[in-house]
Image (cartoon, rainbow, N blue to C red; front, side, top):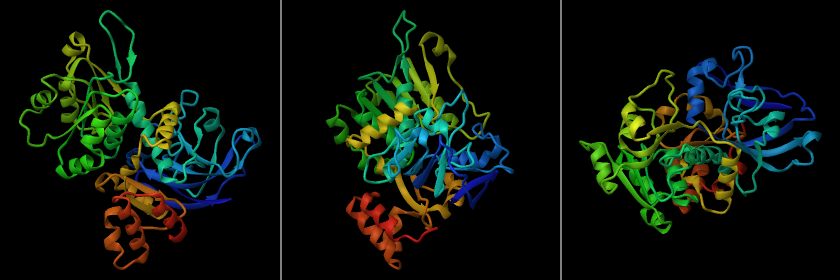
Length: 420
């Protein structure tokens, strides 16, 4: 079967290729990808090429398919998996396979599987590691968001704390404690706010910082102080741009105290160092945002590591349990990460979008892999619609949904957008 896919051939060398997929083996599965959301990690892959830690091929000789936040439909199931999966089932994939101690992952390491493709062959290790998950919702876009949400879930679970005299790590944020999310209103920060408000292990106070009023205002309109309060969380948004002493300012907001848990959502040295200074006794800092610079570093107070038991964790992706939790919370309505999506496009838009992702404002860029569409912001649908009835209709559906992507818009796009 032929597939069309975005493959990386080298640094910033992403191409829309058409090629034949091999016939599946008994321990493989053929799948049709419907949607993929573009992750900053794919931008880093484009920047680094073969130097990326997850790449295992000579990209010039064996280019790999990019994209790892995808959702679709199983087309043909090898007989080894016939008792567990059926053709026609929707699926999502946890790309962090942790297979045999390797960093291999769809979207980085494989020639025949990645999210930015029309059809893919799912290799045996995905099933062996229980990373192929059935997706039961009536849309595809939320399935593409389950992977980034699982990264957030994993970050919260990776936090740890101790008690005096004990060497046992108690996993998770401090229940009923205080949390600071620094640079926390980007797409992943928004997801973290949503999860902190609605998960089973909540903080009592959640302080979210950024330096952009417009981003903070959007976050406050989507994830409201009132909704947090209903769930027992005091939510406070703070612009620290012009604050002379952000540590004292945030301490004052936090009742004169430092924080139990701090999450850093930007790989920026001053932000990391601010996070260090905000940690209270036995405080845990999660460095969430992965840098592109392999030598990135920041100052960390080791006096406080010794005497105040400060510690730091870093998470890169979630695991299968995190993704299952994400899917379950989305299915029962506790999480609604659709607000992460700000742009929609087709497979043709992937190369330029991925390479320039750090320069394109907004949140998640959602791709429908069988379609040929420019990348367009949802906020621009109405303007586009003045000359294009297709976008006028999408704009109507999104306006009814409060400016957010939705099932009606997706269904209309899948039926009426031009094919790739």
